[in-house]
Length: 493
Ligand code: NAD
Image (cartoon, rainbow, N blue to C red; front, side, top):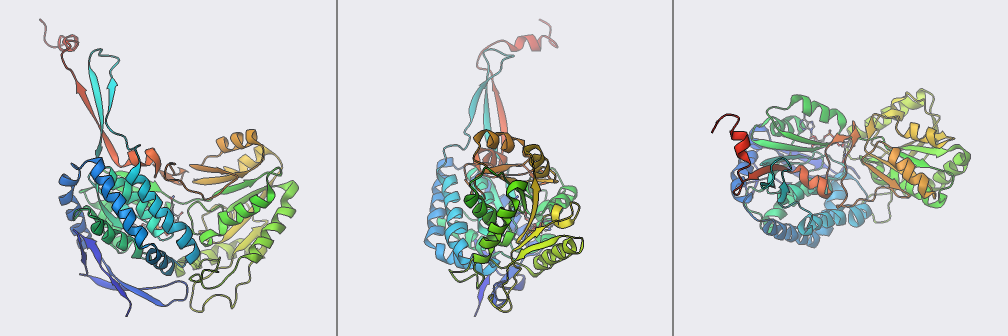
């Protein structure tokens, strides 16, 4: 018997609808059945969220934080189950789920449960009208539609759900139909933690059915979307009604290594930057930009590191290489690399994995490409796979030009021991996150998001919380007659 999942609507699991079978990418085995919602079922979830909004929006920040803390405790108690499910569903290594994805999700719920930085109302002065004052309030928006991708399912859901609820909104979460399991568990755990029925709903299904229903509903006040740039563009052009969007989209992030860097650390950071999660992370450092004077030495060291990474069953604690989550994604990676190679790119190194990974699974070997033609798609487009493209430079200006020579601007890495250079270069890269001598480390206190085609708006930090609010300015006159000047324009004494 495999597990059976329904949608979570109005405080209960709902099994009405078509059941789809999910298979695990590690070895293709049957994992669970999930009821996929259609547009009508999504409307029920939106109605449940709308119905719950009036009361929820009146609760205090303290009450909301108490419930978020209970949710964090609950996910923590079940963290081994969450890690197992996340790895079985996505094919990421169980070590990564156990030590990174799930603990981060818990820590980030706790951040929203304890932060004192959620903006409370503030008083302002009106310089034009002495003696009056203003109060700026941060009001919730209403029903938030949260649309998430398949690569980091629980954490991406948490980044939307926790701040949206903290700000007093109600939520309809739509996980990717490929990887809905931990998001559906999160919705059930919200209920177990004490969130009132309808405050948090989760609806599984395709983008065309569920996603579209959320985007086109006039009852949804905001869509917080994470996914590909192509889908994001489609949503913006096809949305109905007036609603707010935040868009966390794709990337083609540079990892810039100067010859004065701590090279042993930089090698680790570059490998971690691209091959973690088999490159299926939005901010994966997929373009290595290395100073020409150390190029050969650096590439040889990368190869050594790639040789050491252990291929195997991702569900085994000793395995380092994740599976590819969907067969469509595997085909896309293959096509982009093959096209690049036929256009002249050289495979500098490709890891041998044959025989090491379970039969029936989806895998693509970590690959390092050099001499890639500038215009090749693999050099410019997001591959979302374990494929690193190496470029080189002589001067700092050239490094910056190459780093910014992309339509994306999500993240970047800079490796140097020179602090002045680190400041100059990081300040010159058009990206929402720049790591110096580091890669992939995330803090819930730091806003993240994209420049250029990588997105609009921010998640996490104070900036991320503000996205889930709208301001109300209350103009208070408690007794001055300064307004008489204005009234005099119409009403002479
Ligand atoms: P995707 O764009 O295919 O899908 C994302 C979500 O949108 C899914 O839930 C999908 O069902 C839904 N969707 C698809 N079509 C829709 C439509 N017409 N209307 C409404 N919803 C629709 O992306 P994906 O393949 O699931 O995820 C990978 C992408 O996500 C990569 O490009 C990656 O860079 C990006 N990503 C970005 C971030 C970030 O923080 N910037 C984080 C993780 C992933």
